[in-house]
Length: 326
Image 1: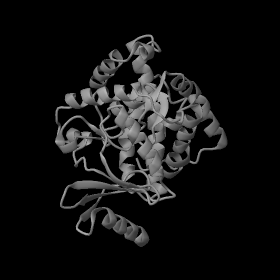
Image 2: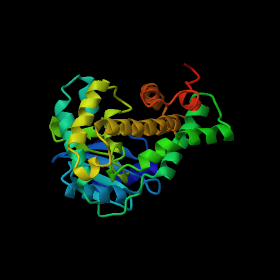
Image 3: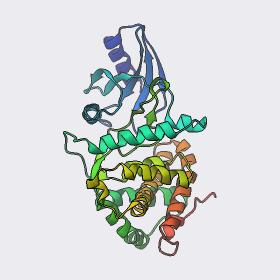
Image 4: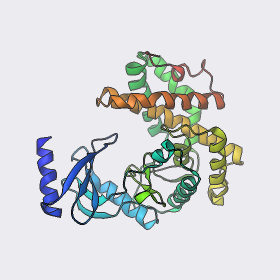
């Protein structure tokens, strides 16, 4: 830690000179750390992504693609791939999530968020993106089996239980994988959408894990956000708005809005299974116990999706398993 701090200090002195101030910002679900840096000219955000745990080259490549697609991302002031340091524009502190906390009018945010999501889906990445395929979805669902069940629910699933779990979800992940494919942010939610200087357009962050995946994925992340609980009628309004603005080539993959919205909820279901597993892993492997507080709302979403999709407890018993302390 001390060595990394010395590296960080030396790099900032090289880039900015000795007159600057630095304070830590909240980290994320990775090895990356963030700092707010201020000199006599402006405020910056420093991403500290220590090799070999993190590789900023992918972040930079995706950022360049987003810039070409006219998506709002941070300006870059300095970068050092070998040491894993990026000095970027400071978007400030106001996130979409913050607007939810203050009960601000979310309509302008939804309109802009969906507008930029359409831009992303229409863009042409100049790189080979990983595919969000069945194998990947199965691995993500394994996080639920490996971390949530034993560490939070107190249940160590047997080999037969694990197989039954995947067999029961096979039709769902097959349907999701067969949806029209587009570029996907993969973490498009209220904590990763910011209002630079308190203004629209929204600024995107945490986009380095972009993939090619289902057209429904990013909207499912936003409307069925692990950190928010929007009323279902409001979700349906924005789901229809998004569907009505899809190009024909993508909308043709659905028989109509009801079919689209059902597939959207299937997508949200798979994402919530993964998220619950990730929250448990962050808490019990990485010592980030605060993520345990995100599980109850995510489970609420999951149980609602199971009910709406007709996925009953006798067929999906492990998905109905409650935390052991509840």
